[in-house]
Image (tube, rainbow over all chains, first blue to last red; front, side):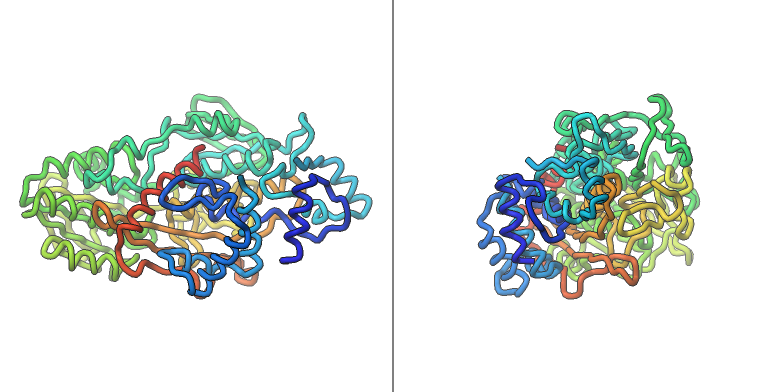
Length: 99
Length: 433
């Protein structure tokens, strides 16, 4: 799954439709779970932080640490436990590419 | 911008290319299943523009990149939020702040918003009939009817009694009226809060309401008292946290009685009676009645669980009773540990939108993850939460809470109070703009 991320990025940057063999990956609709609190596409200006356009590695590290319980939070340490490591990578990649 | 032509897709399939190959090219935030300019994937009619229906309408437009036409039928001219309405009762928030318009859905997303009531559905011809706005054909129908009240479950709670004994469990004029009753209540008066047996809309809602009104009494009418008559055997959401707040901050102000199931109310004497004959008299009574799926769900034959709720397929949110009709939110027979909340209704709206986009694009919808967060304000600044993540179990065919996920606050905090208000602002925006 992680190998897939750069490929998606490539497709996004070039806009090439099926330019070569690509692994199966439907649109990750679950990214919208985050919109409820963090705003549509992760964009907000509020006490709850905006996550759009944040560094991908930071987002992945933060979510992974929330999941492991090594990063403190009021709520994210509970929600992050609901997602697989692969899903966390998809979330980090998705929100890092929102402007 | 990646564009996806359905004809090309069919061609590719015929050539042995797979739908998933194209799926890989469907990029987050870009055109999803967008056809050529004049090619539409179909029309979806959404009935009910609350937390579920309005969200579904927006995300159908967004995720189809405008290829799905959306008609949103809603009888009310404004969106009035139940979440945050308890703060209005306590004077901790302006009523105007929970009232929002539908302009964003029209302007930003090209949704046709029709203010009318649905009066009939022809499920064979796939046609919705409204009371004064004509008929609409659909490829898929989304019904987000919310709840209606079982007034008949409480003897004496007839239409006349409802004018004096308020429920305020749908935000709107009832919210304003209950606030006025609390303002008019003399210091030393008794407020009764009744709570129906679960399941009902917004499990922590009644306990948040009690906390809000306790805060109002403490700061404005310190000789007043709250009697909580709960049809359940304990506080059913965030119990330890609410109890802690009540014991520490509202000591002597709240009397809590579990297993107190109201069966009768007298609006003149303002006396409520339980199933075993216990009686209490209050100066203001807030009676939250037992609930079932909204009336339109009954009218069109969707209700097939205990004669109260709507059974759905948890991949597509399609009714198990009527084909091509998807049902969202509080009206559904809840999955295990899934609350009837505005947050969850929004998630249902997105899940249904995703499934319908996939179906109309000729692909196989996949089960998604659903998350919930319910904040409750316990005074004018501090809040607590409960949250959970629900993943579809393909054997049990229902979403189940991911083991180890979710939980509640460690303690009430000002930080969570700020998050609560941010949550409201952000989710209203996610639904309506």
